[in-house]
Length: 326
Image (tube, rainbow, N blue to C red; front, side, top):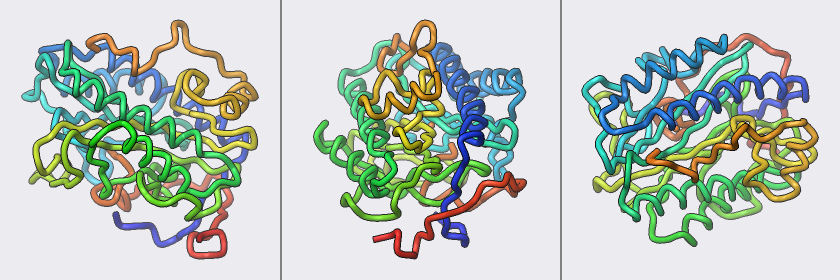
């Protein structure tokens, strides 16, 4: 990942979080519609068109389209593809496939970014366990996104959750990221590492947390298209992501329709309750998959290829090389 030169973390006000929430809800709705559309025979280009329709109908614009030449609204990564898969009319889904869908939207100058992975029809039980392990690791990481913790506490929680779930490859080259007035901001959020290290987490930070794991090894290869990242050994992969606001009450999941109530412990639910979020009707969970995640903010590819953003008045804090970093 080519890091930005300004190694500071953007701090948002509560009002700015409310605006990010609006973008997050566009992403949440779009991903729900896409997950429901996944079926044998549909092409990844069809899914991209659905995403473009839903984002546009909400008055938002896609974060990914045109992002340093990226040619689509979503990333649609199938089977051994980990992230950044380019939608194509020629890529049609088959029963037993696994697809990760990464979606971003900009509304009022603020970004939301999230991803999920779903199976196509009935899938191998080992693939189901892979998806469940990846999503569980995401929520374990989110639960550590609390002011007063360290960034490394998030990374370590993801790592330990994956380790406890089985013998999975945990991707290291691609990471989560800060998010706000641009899609990829400081700090990078690795999915591994020791606890108690890194910048001090503060209220007002927003992070996109996104574990990526495989049924095999952790090594990756970027294809000739310059975007698609696949597992080096051909094993299947999963990817989940949410945009999370750090509040005094705990994490508020801006890209979950219920704000995270369904999955987070009591401390985090307080943050959601303080905002008055209510579960969707009916609540939709990626774990409740009927047959029923591109610009990951990552160590290569997209991170560092920033679009210029208009100033939004968000202050910055937390010099990554200063006393807040251990």
